[in-house]
Image (tube, rainbow, N blue to C red; front, side):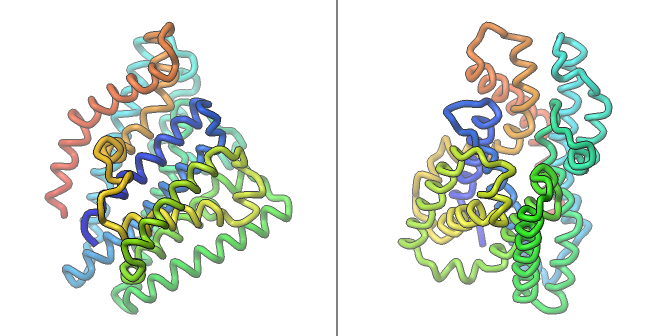
Length: 338
């Protein structure tokens, strides 16, 4: 497929609305949908990477795949946990000190979402890592399924499987919602909310040949509709309610598909390829990791500074340090396993 600059712009929009949602800024009380966009985009990219490697080499090295994933995700996560422990040791930050050891273990184990489901609670400096847990669980299972299908049946079988599973999970989610299941459980459980969108993205990742037929002009329109849809939904505070769970996450699925298809189909310069926006997108993983603990850490360091400025500056500093000291060396090592 090649590099698609617009995908970095999508990442940027997603992480911006998530940070604004967690900060309670600008009325973006539905900004949690940025996480949903990340789910769809992750399913798309991971599946596309597997298919591209299969086409290039006639097969996929699962060992190399998981080494690359580990080098991309784990060093920054370890750096986050170490940084929060350092802040807890040096500063008086009660919001991050409570049960820090237990919460660190849940964060590092990539099953934090199931901890939330079982306990019915959600909070702490690593509360946002529930979504990374869902993605990592997907990475453990789906690539194996996809590679087996690629070897035996080809891309079409992967597409049918991803689409069928996404539809099945969406219908089960709808049934559970309207039969009184907890919205909290549906939202955080791997096999409902996250699973639907990740598998939808996987289906899309098998459909680049179909996306190519869309054309640039229609792609540009879809891109604009998708971005507008994400922004509109970001103002609707329906995290556990009828709009999302009650319709199997169809609204956010539709706008996610629209914006991804648009970005891939139309490779011309657009607002999504604007340099500063793409730079935010390239740093979106670090921004997502650091922004929640930085609410508490920055308040302890510079309590008199405006909260929004604190978060932006604090997160930018933490992300920059993490990039140069941790992520950049890890990415250089990752290239050996390409």
